[in-house]
Length: 111
Length: 114
Image 1 (tube, each protein chain N blue to C red):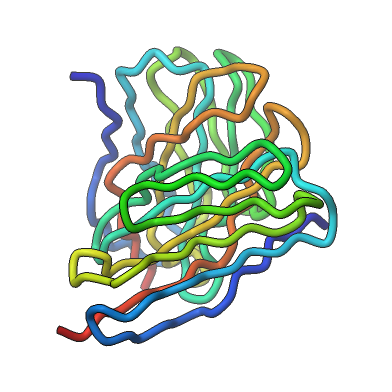
Image 2: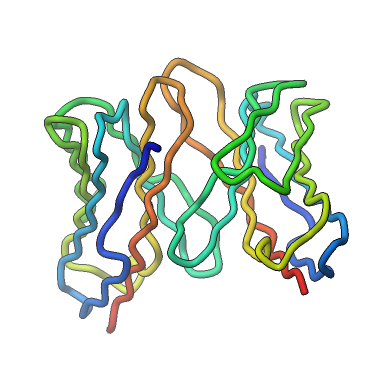
């Protein structure tokens, strides 16, 4: 079946270090979304990427969608303790289709 | 303000009992979804609905059922609870449209089956 693989599963960083999580699909995605879940909370939408090669930025967060629309990444520059949580990518394989979530990357930040 | 709520927030039940988890949204969204979240598996889709009287199975639907009698509610029923169904359950909703829309998640229900 259709799967979205996300790595790494866990990442521990020192505050101020950068962080990147990656998502990969074996088949072309229609679009990809990113969500953040704080410890004990629920997933909250961050951004959606639709176009091949698209890059979007939100302050210290940079989101990329690969040229082949099979992979995506989220990069956080100079992490802060407020960045702690699990980051999920979620892709769809046709317009208006169901979201297929990656396994998530749990980020911990040591002050 | 529009919102999506789930109840109960915590539930402990026994193997074999029927359990119903409630989900209510005031966004007036057509689409509603139920996920379960387990360590190492991310969010897995159980059932979803694109409108009143519409229900569809997700990737882990065995042992679960839903019904959609109005726009606001999508209750999830575990017909005969099993220990493997111990999990955190999230309900979500989204508008319908040609492009996959943002999903708004409820606060979650932590279910323990003993």
